[in-house]
Length: 240
Image (tube, rainbow, N blue to C red):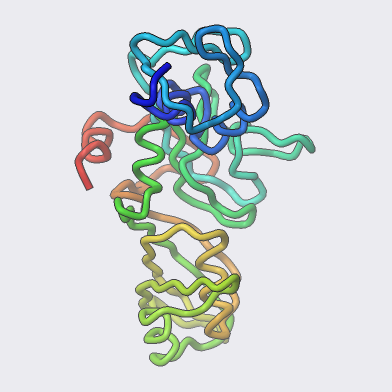
């Protein structure tokens, strides 16, 4: 090993072992060895063409090809690869032999477009703030949303923990004391859309993501999935 090369957790993610965050957990747990030595620092630099890297006793090598799956997530499923409490996860809906993981998260009660892959490099790129992947949601909220509330969302609202976020919103319909909105954001804070709408006094009653990084659901039914088309993968690989 040297002080050059690639961070160990980044290499594991690029090889499809897990997301970068979970790969870091694997390293800290002592399950990863480099040249026969246990390494517990996720940021340890490795020379991927020279160092012998193992996870759980098995060699780790770059994948020749990756898998990219688009899922129309129903409510009631956790966005995680596994759950220690045995609750339903999005992986229960996808029948792939590859070890996939979700790119970002959708709340338990949020429906819609979710990308799953074994390509850690692309996943981290799409989630990086510099990439600015646009996320578009259809929301049904309580009450009549005013122009002032729309303006506040655009300027930015506090959502707790010292965070302030902004997003574009437009009204698409009004019915029986409820408002239908299309909301566009470029960040990915936990429960961001719900917290934004609570900040302006209009709690979310139903939320569905319909677009992410240029991908759309099309006619994909709730609970179903499909592989990305080659042209969709090429678009995702374009520089930010």
